[in-house]
Length: 365
Image (cartoon, rainbow, N blue to C red):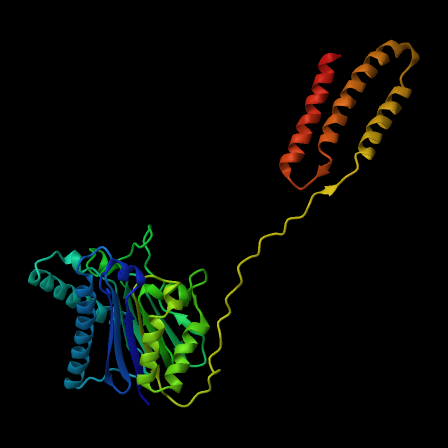
């Protein structure tokens, strides 16, 4: 039983067109057969030396965590492999890791005579054992885990700013407060860390659910192929035309499989992604005959007129003249609107028209 891990980075087509280097970096350290630390970083596109910053950030973080683990063992303390560390303990470890990374970036900036912001990058780090994982994230990208007999799950929502391509970097003043930390207990089988170049291919951000087919293909590859063979396959896939057609950014994938025992390829259940609501189909308006409306109006009017006394015939003739004009205008309105729909605007307009006609008739009396 041990961790089987591969990692690779590929330059995005937008960087190739600008002839800029790949600004991503990823690496890992297997501390014991059962303990692994990994990290990926994405250099800021606006930082002129961000490829240096991302590489240095990952190497510094892994080096510090390795020294911490070794010092624990020298002092006689073993990292608890069955019981997860507390979130407070994880926050303390990652706070010190971030401090070490920032210090290394400042020293490197002085060494190559540039601003610290020229080394800006995101950073995702994790410590995984067979029974728990502790992770941190600054900026965008994603960490997805697969626990035994459970769907893949996303550890953190990506840190996206108010505007496109805006996120938090380790060199940002608020990096420490923006750092997300999580400890997840459970039998670990699969861990994937990636920069944001593959977000659209891997995560349904409408629901926050990882795409099962995306991750299951890599997990099955690690289970059924030799490490070197799968490493080559990953490199070819990251540089493939199929991937580059969907993303032009740099891409990094760090994939870890804990080989606990032989498993079948269909052992992991899929998370159910709810479908997007379909638009309400348009239906043509229903034709409505206007004859009953006119019949109703004329019949009610004739009843009213028949009940009037003879002594008011002159007044009736005057009213009849105005009523005929009103009915003619109302008939014209109805003829122009032969269809009645569910649109409130039409109903309001028709009501308004009838009121206007009635008001005009009353004024003319």
